[in-house]
Amino acid sequence: ELKVEQNPLFLSMQEEKNYTIYCNYSTTSDRLYWYRQDPGKSLESLFVLLSNGAVKQEGRLMASLDTKARLSTLHITAAVHDLSATYFCAVFGYGGATNKLIFGTGTLLAVQP
Amino acid sequence: GAGVSQSPRYKVTKRGQDVALRCDPISGHVSLYWYRQALGQGPEFLTYFNYEAQQDKSGLPNDRFSAERPEGSISTLTIQRTEQRDSAMYRCASSLESDTEAFFGQGTRLTVV
Image 1 (spheres, rainbow over the protein chains, first blue to last red):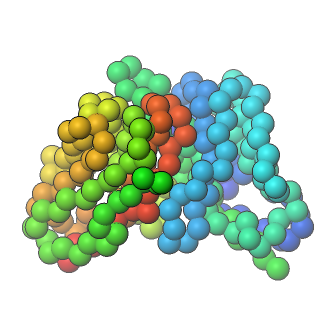
Image 2: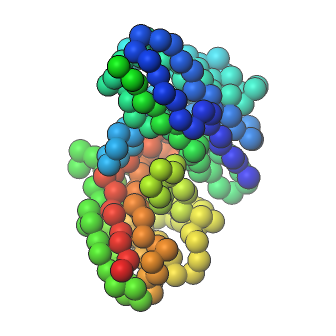
Image 3: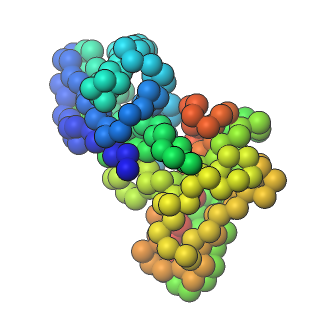
């Protein structure tokens, strides 16, 4: 059974500093997605990572995927307040007759002035 | 439509009543997911359709929960004899193909009193 874990669960960040969120998963997959969720809102797709070594960047966020280590990272460069949100990774699991998208536990980011 | 549409946005029901939650996916999207999200948690997988076929229902908590997608487009998640523990945000997502990026609706907030 595919399990997806994120750490840390909570990250208090200072403005202009750099941070990394980690996403580990338990079974083979080469498709990983990062989502952002603001309080009371739906999930917004940030990145789609489709192969080993894939790297995507958008503004101050950069995501990468290492399928051999079953690890993805979301790196935040020079944090700013508007990055405060909960970030989820989701892994597409291939298994027998069924494939499905499984989410991690989420990481709540709070940027302090 | 332009995005995934869910209705109703909010539903308050008395314990023991049946409820039906509707999801209208993005036009042309083959895959449709139902998730349940508790406050402060990641989306928990419930069930998944490819076209009209229910590929996986392993996440449905018990036999009071059922889902259908009879024509491969709109889907309905039905909860019979609701209980207070069913209170949560129910989210629907759709994707163009089975393993591509999933787009989420705004969700239905279910409260069982």
